[in-house]
Image (cartoon, rainbow, N blue to C red; front, side):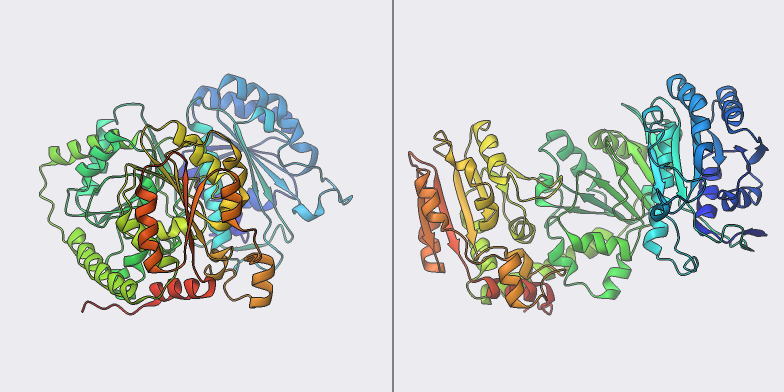
Length: 573
């Protein structure tokens, strides 16, 4: 079948059909030619051609009103889009799902006196549920354009089409930048665009939906991935329930605050760095169930992008559309603990015996990795890793607050226990980490400990200027001469030392001990294992002032030891 050569337009039209859009009202134009050609090739969508965009929009509105289903509108660039606005406003306040698709010039040609060009993106923002912009394919780059950009289009259009139908329905606007050539044709390639579905329920899932989910779950290798969550007893129970099945492995970061759903479930990067490619292929999950916020682990994100699951179920209520692993298939808008209880009930009703070695295979790898990690750290020299391993093993934590940077990454590698663990992972900046811990300390009856990097603490040192810091608050600051993370992460680790130390690691930082002492914080500085042992004992004692343990470690050696941890050969001796 002949179709447009523009792959974006083929993606958009295929997703319209997959999401139940079976009618489109179109108006003639040159800029929207690829969209019209793609629509013509889609037999599942009925097309109506109306010259006047204002009339076309009201006809589409009337059609959607009667059908109680989304209807598409397609126009060219310029004022054609503005002619849609009366009908779009009516649809917005009437709760009618119109899918407004406007062709546009590439962004670089806006405000350049090119014909039929206005600032289109966002022009309907006050009368639509969401505005979405699809960038232009550079001329001559269509067939070789990056998979990442094609994924972005797929994700964007899925999000827009779900937004039109979820909650109170309403219009959405998809602005499509289109570069020349516009009328070029090609043989239509068979495509299977990923269509994301929405399952929404405040309490109980529909029985037909639950039966299908339970049936899929029972026959699959399932990986449960948990990012940051607030402590929740009910969620703990739900996760323990679902993780009792032998076909389920749990990958829970320490800031997910899930208490022992499976042995070594927080050993994410530790086990992934020890796995062979054969292991990764063999243990690729069929279904990923994700919950909580953003992940610390880059390794886990990359693993699931390199070896994508067949299905990904994203649980919980969210203000935005997240497709972090590039494999989202089901956005399930329900409390995770409720979902787990219902899913387990659905599995029991199927009366299927689940025979799987999926969890046991991961357990073997985790045990092997734990032995390897323990041996590596035992032989490591004085460093961030060595010091924090001792601290996590020997200091009795209650509530932990972590700064962003290497500290939160070390917490994912080193086994430890606590009442709850927090970190500002919504945006992951270093600003406000200390202030957040101080605010949390005042609201918690037990002891709060902040573990921070030196740059993070100095950035927010004003939080310690308050004369009413909780007397029982404890702080551990890893002083590795500033910005240790930049010596490790891929994007900056190979920058020449002269530039790295001046612009990133900032070696000439103020003395943290002097600043803390000025704020009436008791301070102890340690620089080796022997003094660290005394420091941990001192930190555990009662006091009438807040206490800070400053752990001074060598910057380059610490970065090298951490890199060696991830590249070490697996040993089980």
